[in-house]
View 1 (cartoon, rainbow, N blue to C red):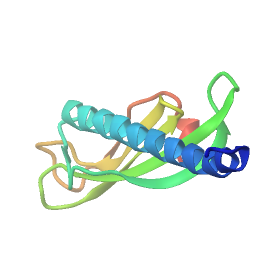
View 2 (cartoon, rainbow, N blue to C red):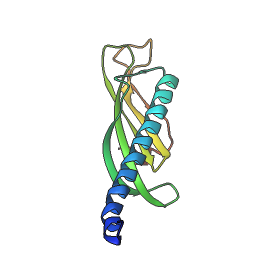
View 3 (cartoon, rainbow, N blue to C red):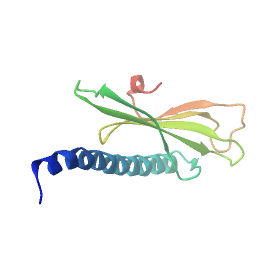
Length: 125
């Protein structure tokens, strides 16, 4: 028989599972955005993966509180060196994507230029 005690004990498990499931969906969203950005920047995303680096409460551009997620990834230009990148989300909203300074295709490794996808650089560290 289902009692109030069973419901009270099941509720936290259900909430944790729902939060975990939403996190997986947001990770997939971030990965799709990183793939698109790498294609646009003419670089190759390495390992076809991103890693959750930070999870924290933060404000978005409009001052609303939410959960901020930062994911790290690696990319290459020529296939010889790995460079780091970062994508920041506030909920499901993209806050910015940053690529480490890297040579553009056809340039030598000596010339390095930063590439930013968003004008909101303050969310990137």
